[in-house]
Image 1: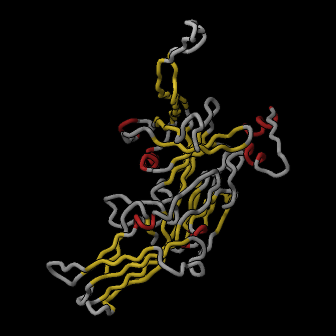
Image 2 (image 1 turned 90 degrees about the vertical axis):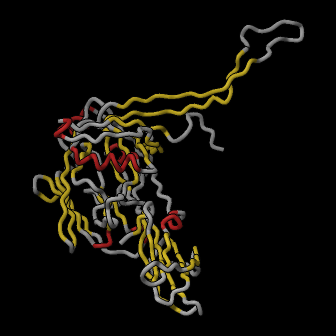
Length: 383
């Protein structure tokens, strides 16, 4: 089972003759077997404690140590990001002899589990919700844990329109795969972006005929996804929405499994800017007692601006309460814009600090409005 490093991960050794424990942590990316570091990243020694009943015990918490070497990034390319962790825990007696221990290698993701969950959840589908709202004629992806060699099948009106099978891999980058109806190696979201990402100086020219085609035919339409492996079958229902009035925004965040998850805000978006500055009174008087009326007496300096964007989800299913919960808890969030030059991914931070979960019983319709801060100053000051 993978280690979710935003929650604690403990490892213990207990023995009647235990005096102390030594933990060696090896952390790396690449091949699980051939790229193991020669020397451990961390070596920690800790004395044993003797409880009121039972044998002496040593316990180590290692998530924070692992997380120093795991920083998930997103630039529009969907790639699996995890690290291999080899745990080598030795128990020693007072004569430095062996007194128990454990050794194993596993994958670690930048995820977490909730307080009420006794153990981290394990699933080949690395999203919590089992219903998706997706944008018509846009590619959507499901993060899949490949360790159980699952098969993902896409259906439309009970007919198979796409299938992708995975095999267990020893590469850290292959532990999470982002699969769409087009496979697991596409990074474009729309037909326009697909054209612009092609080689040879591509040019996208919109036309009435092309728009008419998209209005009549839906590319890559799916209404059900089946994920199967040796443990059984799981189903994700898909509802495709069309938005003609507003420009939908795709928000990507790191979910509780440590995977990238997309969600669309289909309705109104509002952008705003907050400016902070300092000022001083300047002396504009010349040596002869004259001055120019076009000179600033009160001058601004250290002008810093930050922009915000408020997004409305549109009407969704209450299943999306789980998605909003994980997005609010995420430490990294991005918004994707489609520009004339292609895709532009910008980092944002969730500004909304409180959310009241809505249900169809209490609220009839489930809709959320979330405010985000752009994670950079408006005036470029990166030095």
